[in-house]
Length: 130
Image (spheres, rainbow, N blue to C red):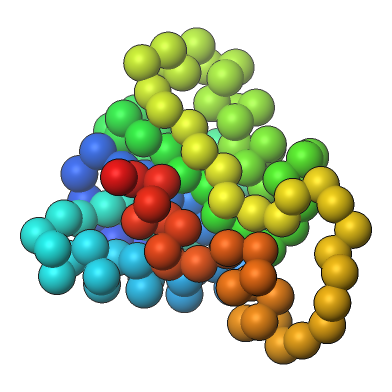
């Protein structure tokens, strides 16, 4: 799968997969109202991972944020960090991951309810930047 640069901004790169693209777009709209911009790279597949596109965008950013509807441990963010770390360009860059903690999720509800419960939200992206 090829990666798609959905939005182009400065210094902050948000890397998404699946439904988290919509969450990142919400954060983009909120930040734009404040005069801030972020880049959003959407990777529709984790395997294969579009390493070339990923590294092109990572090189431009000082903060990389991944957001996923999955466990943080061994998930999408971990795969991104692994690729970036192997290039040796990680020093000087900040890396933050938004996703599910490594616990058994308790409770039931809609997808949105569970995303909100585990703070997989546009506000979590904004908080990671500030």
